[in-house]
Length: 180
Image (tube, rainbow, N blue to C red; front, top):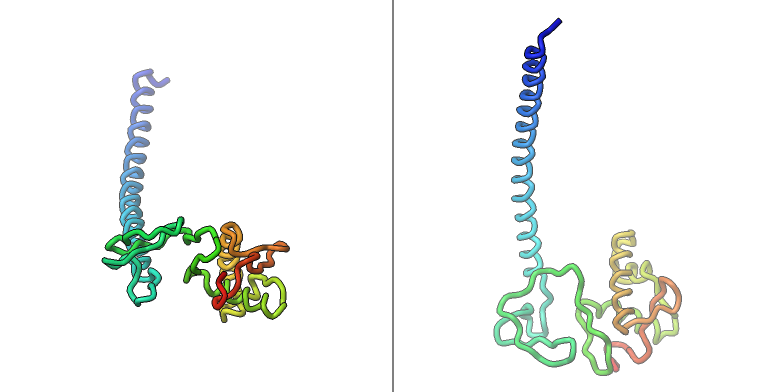
């Protein structure tokens, strides 16, 4: 029969091996985590740079945020734009519609198509029809992106949704020539 001390030494050896294995695994995970964090930071910087490059241009041909320019706020007041363009945001900024508000360049295509259809008496438009009108591939990703923008425009009073998934300009919102 083995001695008690011998059994304890045997269990201590097993526990020490397990600790060594776990430390090796922890070191491997820490190294993998460092690489993943570095990649994540690089992608965040890349997204920021792309957002700066793709920032919409204003009427003078300069991107938003050029020195000496002003940008309208949600309440219609003008404020000085920041000297550097902002990075891409997860949500586009759409002001609440009111009479006399200038159209946002981001949503002008949607509003133009819907206003043209309304003038022709063709009724509400689905997002699939919008995608086709814009010359996009009518694939779920494109259609859902348009649906998201259209829903945002409904929430801000630019569009109406008389039936689920069907959009038309809100009452009082006309086309580019008569922007109400």
